[in-house]
Image 1 (tube, rainbow, N blue to C red):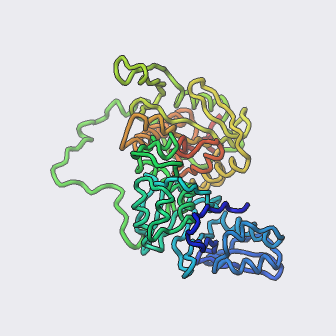
Image 2 (cartoon, helix red, strand yellow):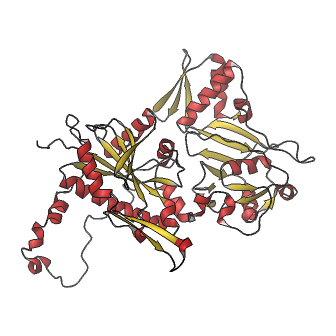
Image 3 (tube, rainbow, N blue to C red):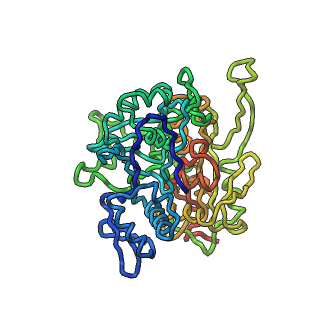
Length: 490
């Protein structure tokens, strides 16, 4: 598909900046005589498939860069194959895009995709359109470079021309495009269009007064504070390309902290002597806490049953009571509904929902389900089989387990439910709620003789594709694997 071109004001610079696609600097292409092409990264090679000689010839230019417009506009067989090759490289995160100055060829910005399906686009710009910097956009130093980012964006822009930073500062209030074009140092319509496509800048048909959150055009985004959305997108997987997980980045640099904090100075009060043989040690909750442990291996010959799953969900998350309360006495417009669950929740919001990726459950078909806590029911969601496999496989990898969990519970938050009430620490409350729910799931599973394991990572983009919900409207904040352990009895 041809990328749409921007409208240019008569008399404006005739030669626009050029957008090209190229391999990352540490990537090389291996060309085999039989037409097989692979991408070599260090001592690893990613197979990309077999291509004809014309496409392979074009591919050799990817290290220096190929004009993006020519890749998009290809209609011949060689061009079509090149599109396939570029798409496969993008799926592995091996490409970047350069917007270069037409006169010098020097890069103005380098676009670094953060999701495999990112494709740069240049939406049409109207003469009377006004553009404004998103309140989620931020500029920071990364190593020796300045990068422009936004938790809304699927790309990071490395600024190679420092003058662009000054230009962006002027977009803190809406500016008409016709006015910007007349300014000295205007970087060009192409950059503005790319910034709009990346949701770092947003456009309006006419300039608006004020800086209302609603001006960006998405009511759900209006409920988010900047730091909360940034933390959500950067502490999960799916919308950034940063290394994540147990990478031990400071081995040999900083020694690990001890497991138990060194004691404070002063005389200790020995609690063993005070408590003695307390009867609380034999209380049911004490036994559950002591018996609770993470189980990553399950008995797939005797999987969890639908009856057990029903008891598990009902004990941990079923709605127990409902009521309505007014924010201000006598203000019916500010009435808020409440639906209490068995676990505590900040402000009584109970914003968490459970989604189940079921691999093995006796009495329940393999699939993806939402737990309706109000009606105590499971509702199937028509997710694709490969998406279900990816979700289960991701949890298996994160746990280091030999097989997928029998049931994978994704804890998702309806963010607007809690951010409608709280500012500054709304997302912090969501994570606290997720923590107490995970402990509740652990204790219920332990009490039922089932095995559970909290999983430290989740993919918010995969969840969005499986549910059709925007990542900022409802998304994962916790994951819990569930199944029957191999040492079960009976």
